[in-house]
Image (tube, rainbow, N blue to C red; front, side, top):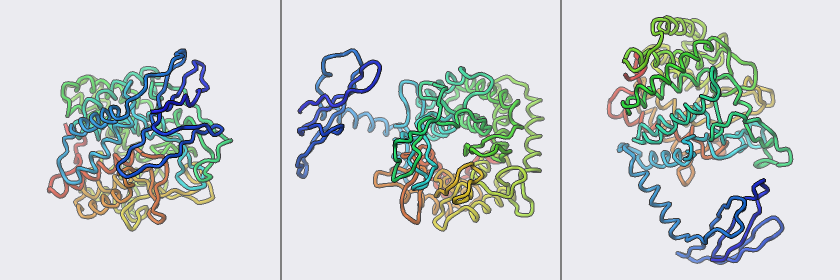
Length: 477
């Protein structure tokens, strides 16, 4: 194997990258080029090694075969821990492996996707940096992992989340760097053309400073589920959930940027308000179960007040559906997620009506779902011009909701569409354009694999005749 000291990184500590290759590698300006012929069953190895600054000798020569075997053994052993044995297990394992690969092992943080600025619309401006650890995305991820037996990873993330939030008391950020970094300033790299001319290319993410009330409910909901799978952690988790409810008590009635991180005017998003209800509901249940202490009577009153307000201001009785925000006629696919919280029982006409409305007005013929309506060249309610395609986590929520209200065959159709949206390696992007047959947005996307896992479990549970979801009571405790 030949060795090429390939790149001197422009860093203060003089870090270096080395390339080892079976083929001859030559420099061509700023590029490295190798030309070779490979036959059937023949392998040509390229190994990239990093070396920190201050070390002047080359790193040890790698052994590609041994490294490959070590990698395969690690992931095969990891996959063997999966406890899911139902239909579509191969797709489940593929999605779980993808989620695991998004974990930053030194801290337990989980990134939303490993890429930045892959466009939601070719040639458009909806290009964002997803290489950060959103609390929402992380919570959804550990929920999916815990459901399949990966409690160790879930517990590591919880420890990271608690430590990261300790640096921002009173109102935690909605996202951090993988090391708990809080400064994530957004910049545009104007000298880069972007993927297929989709500019700007952004690094950092300005949403880090937004108020997104829904995060509190999503964290509390998932933590409640993890506590069921790891009862030894129930008291520790209960204190975290009570802390979330304590923060939320001062924030819940404010307009916010919502789950979609709108850059336009803040609103009273119905999804956010229902997730505020969810956070209080889960905290109350931890206290009632003896796993935490808190002002349970005051929170019961507040929980009921939020419920009444949402049903009054966020529900359109004429159309029999909840709406995107108070006073708006718009629909939003995040309402599907809200219907899965136990805010209302599954057989309530308002749940069924909301699922049907979103399916009809935001759904496509193949069962996929748009987040909300965009406005073409005009700036939309989210603060950006341009359009986008089907947002895959919303399609997963639709499958779960259809199973919840007793429509397993429709849930299976949505699941099949999600499976068809993956590439040859079973990987999913943030969005999928069924007309062009192409993936859009950052890739691979945790949200989308969480969607597939949720849809698989919903379809499997519905086909077994079991009750899916949490019913009227909310958490399953």
